Length: 496
Image 1 (cartoon, rainbow, N blue to C red):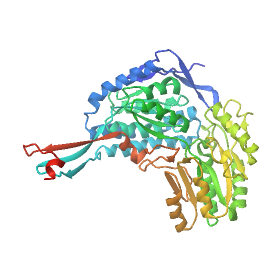
Image 2 (image 1 turned 135 degrees about the vertical axis):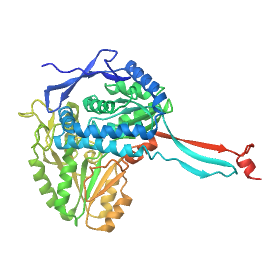
Image 3 (image 1 turned 180 degrees about the vertical axis):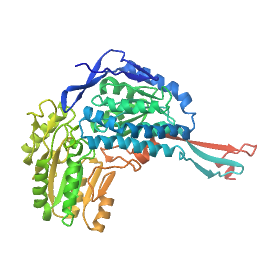
Image 4 (image 1 turned 60 degrees about the vertical axis):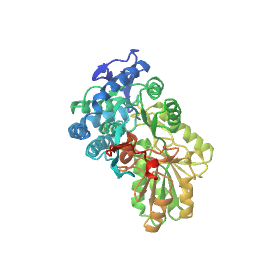
């Protein structure tokens, strides 16, 4: 069966990669379903895209921010109209169930409307000068051409987190979507163009990290890089970007802990744990990959949690009855399999799942059974390293203070959760958990676009998506207007 061929989007035109090579985009639930062939781009394609973005920046930066915001407002409205179509296409290319891909598109809608409002709130500061007849203020300026590198697990939501604030701030963009899920980014950018975005303001270069991502990071005309992905790749990006003095925003891995105290609403905690651990097939940086159980409820929670995990319906996400879709590709299956083997060698008890699903009806895809380990100690690799699959570890603890220590004992610090009825412990956890996000009586997943999103330690480098995005995509300029009609030498004359 034939499949469509897609091109890069540069200067408002669809153009093939200079090298002529393509990558196939496959449905992870059924590899016989080919979504399309996408460009395997290289440095020449990145050069063309950056040149187009630089040319467009000359005029885009002069468009008033409220007018830029109106394009985002129209984009949000168009995304609402196209939500079901885009969700179904996303499920085909990414695998997660329709309820989740509808949520992914909805997050882009929410981001469009939220950032559109920021078009009238790009505030600076006015302040008294220390000298007479002198006015002082600060204003936000766009950075210039920015490079955006996005992952496959939220192939429309995360590009919207980066594109929309970058655009409202007056930047122009070159985006490299994940090679596993480019279509959703194409759909997002096409919606922007249909909403009136001028040619060249956003350009798409499709391809893998070494071929297209690395040249984008190293390009001398790109002034900032925003990346979401693994900590290992993020570290390399930061090092390479430093050579050309780029500012870099990194949103990376997590090994997120959900703490359940003896006094918790156990039914609520079980619902949250199941959703947090196996939503998006565990392929979220915020996934609940560690569940810390106080000993008073540990046995009951474990028994009930495992029973429910075994009943989860795994399959093609286009089936409305399916609860857990496939993993994105064979590499992720291999990673999940490897960590199961590591955990068992270290003495963990496998109580559910632990294997790839290869029989019918799973033979054509990349499926992994929902997996639960018990008998975990904080030192085990399965309790410290990110798996990025449907694999969750249960750890027991005695005291609340011990739970906080275990949660904080890893290299990551993205999301945390606490289930309790004790308000004092809730506020202590909010203060003491080393993470960019803390939930009380909710799982570790479920961020909202108007709050800051990001983490500490090896999860991020201090920047944030959401509320903090405009800080990254703008630079400050101080402006002084001296209307004294004489030379005033700031601190020198002021000291007299």
